Image (tube, rainbow, N blue to C red):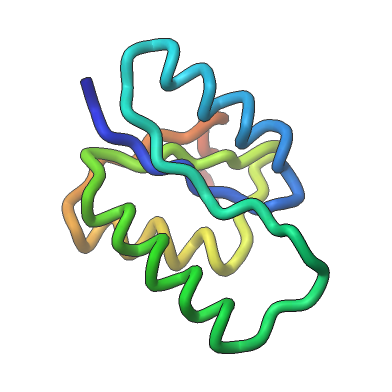
Length: 100
């Protein structure tokens, strides 16, 4: 069993929920994002979410990136970089195009 943190844009909330369930049913322990319950968050609240998400990455063996249609936003890029610095496995929903 791996501990896996889901990372991705909330644009893809349905996909994030689907893969969280799939990964769990595959026998993993899944740490997910906080799903928003309101429209506007303060800077402190957003910062608190980021700190908590980084802690989830620290606790994980891997992150699973929901990169639908190749999309990775700035926040998720930062999460991937953080996971790399923590020597975590990076798993992408869709194969990444490495050509420049």
